[in-house]
Image (cartoon, rainbow, N blue to C red; front, side):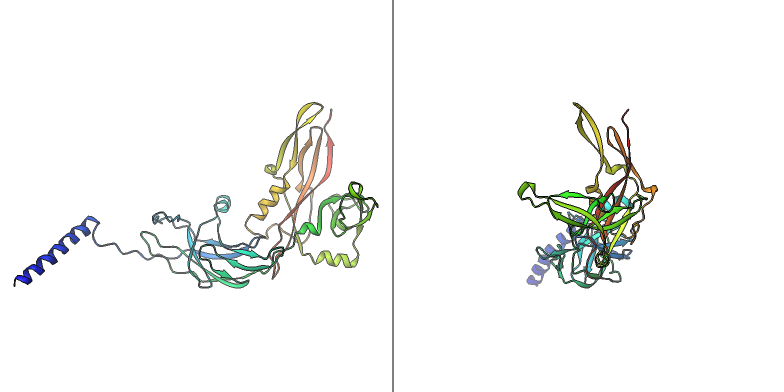
Length: 349
């Protein structure tokens, strides 16, 4: 009897503090609620560097509650590639700010040194290595303080490319010539490159030619190649067609017309120029789109860029982009921005 009383007292001594502890913490922990998955992958694409992105709708879950210092927010989602481990990815804020799109990076490409071959893809969060070829990707809304993780979406399939595209400037000059036979003196031989040249009667119409070069026979600093532009042979036309180019003619955008300060006759003056590098960077780092791109280069007067090339000269230019199209094996190439002058006016008094 004495032992039973002691046992009861010891049990009571443990139970009572536990009850008070539960009371202090709010009682029995609340069971997390089920969450309906509103997230759906509508497209998977790659940029010109091979990185892989998912375009997702229904990504916002504003009732999300932070879990400690997890770095998650109301746009964080979890992805799984080929039924692998789930990993968190956060929305790319620039794309969301610009047009409200839910773009998430889900993998990056491993490229063989000095080669365009993509050897594999990797996910930084899980360390998962993925071979080029077909993948299946699912998305879900992650667990929060209040909700369980949602069910997974129906997987969307995509075929990972095995190659980057070649550097287009190795094959195409960014210069637009005035016409056939237009001579250029350069320190290096460019006779492997194609080049655009203006139609003799319509500056909005461009043709494609190829350089032919002759060397001046000099050496060292005096060495020069004289390049003239010739029409394409049938074989060269086939070679050009095989590049698989597409074009986008840009409308005037003042944010890409920049000013710089120079000196003229001892006075500081302002000049303007078209920031082609920023245009290229913006296009290469934007959401991959085919909208606005065409197999044909269609230039019109409605696409004129007018700016003050110098204090005494205003110019009307055309600005267009060129890239190699996506193929079954290769991602699209980085864009090349080309601008050329249609006409200019002397503003001097």
